[in-house]
Image 1 (tube, rainbow, N blue to C red):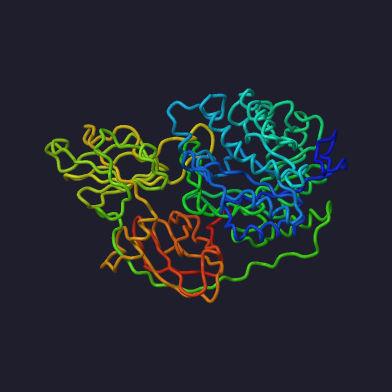
Image 2: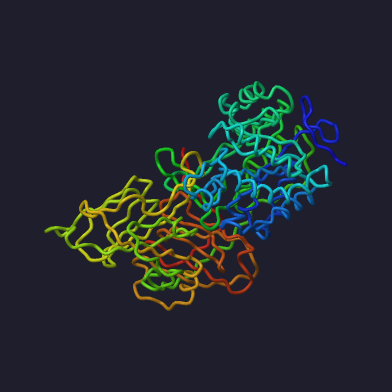
Length: 589
């Protein structure tokens, strides 16, 4: 039996000192057909371990409907890591942050009235316990002392930045041990004394998360973890992007120097990220520290392996550093080849939001207030709201001010079918003048659920009272827009005249000799969602910085391929341009 334990100064593998040199791969952000390739390239960089979060809301988006197959096959992912001769670290949360929507927590959980998140609240603990038992059924038989490869399991995630309920941490720890998890248990927090004190327990091994000033931060960590190995469980080698911002990068040489300092100090490390992947579909999270900032579709992270899984300058710089401290294979992966470049004319099919055009379920009965996405059970990004406008709300004027308590997160307003304007949460916009009319329609987009701090689990939709000329509007109907049905309708629709002048569907076809990675240039479009052969690539937006969407080769096929675009605003040119490489936007000089 192989053992992995914590000694006085080191991790011990079969009783001998062992350094963990790990990299983060999130299986739920990578096409399953690419898992083997990314894991192999991690080994070729000199890593001996792969770390992953577990995204609860990917496995159980609907309560009681647990899925551990396909993209969610954590067991297969761990087995592929083992097949490459590598160890694994599992971080099941239940909260993961990760710039992933709702921090990994399911919407059905966080929308329970009065539930106490990330603390010793009975309903929360009950649901978390059921979730963790399912995860540990997968993990327990794959631990290193059972012939598997899992060497560490993390309790919660950066908890000291959120709370200090040690009873809650103790409950998670006891549950983990009761589920037959026998490998060492860890916590991770930023190396701030108050976070390190709040986020762990004496019988858990404390690790740090940081990307700079490694020597000083390890010293702080050592003050709170006086024995055992020092470990940076999240060595931030890049950063994420948000719509309306810049594309973040870090200097490869500077990051490599920090990694060298870590390893020179004898510390273990988990590189976050080794390969970020993509927020396919609408899985991106958001931040809100006074201003709402939704995360882009790409999770490239300026990582050693880029969004399409190819080595960067940082990959080779890190590989050179690791070679000073560990054996590194002689083979290195090749650079990213140019992707096929070509253009596809798109056929506009007209407004996909017209009455009766595949809204999914029938509208709910008229409600006094606009129901939230959660009340509607809408896990997709769009809901259409309609209400009759009382004539006396305008008085003698031809227009009146329409005001919302809050829009979460982006709303397109129309009166009698005519577009009036757009309101953005990110700009703190809540009101606009509207002309006299009889019917108000508001299309609302959930741009991404906040993945951090106190805004976890907030409601989406039209929040608070809606007034016109100071008078509250009542009698609302709400229609969840089901994107799969919308895409099917667009694919089968005929050509519409002048359809690119506003909200429209677009469809086109192209041929490939074989499945291949592609990069879809979205610069000629406004805002919306793109699909290739039914595979949901994600969101695009002229707001940038991201200008291309990554199309993984397994989403394509030899022969005929179809692209469908769900455009929310308008396109400049109805064409799909595929380009040789990614364009993730301008950088901060």
